Image (cartoon, rainbow, N blue to C red):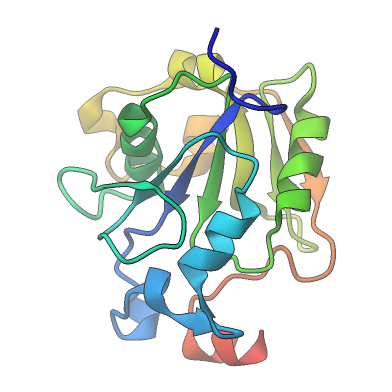
Length: 188
């Protein structure tokens, strides 16, 4: 079996949304603390053997594969599954991260992996109890619950994950915060 590092995982960054509340700005290229949101996401996934970014290509400091779901804007489930299909390696687990969560770190993903032991995965949960788009999923179990191509477009993430046994991992500090509006960016 191919060595995928200590966590045996590859990752998918979801960066292909419309960013309607950000006037259609490309979230991956928005800067926070002098770095793009995509650079922050790639830092969080430093332990991943391979990263696929589902979104339009932009310059990166780390080699990644870019792809787009077809048709575009099919939602996070379509993006996630398109990203998994674009992986060149076969991981034990798939890390998933929305590009607009700049406070998620490599430590966050290590905690998610620890919590996922013996389960189908683990997901970051904000203080309000909402599950976030920061998770690790058993690749085989994800394949088990995968809908057909038509069914994945517009599908809710909670519906995809419903049959899976996922550990909830409480966010620390601002890990759960995302950038949906210019006000969110300012507050971070």
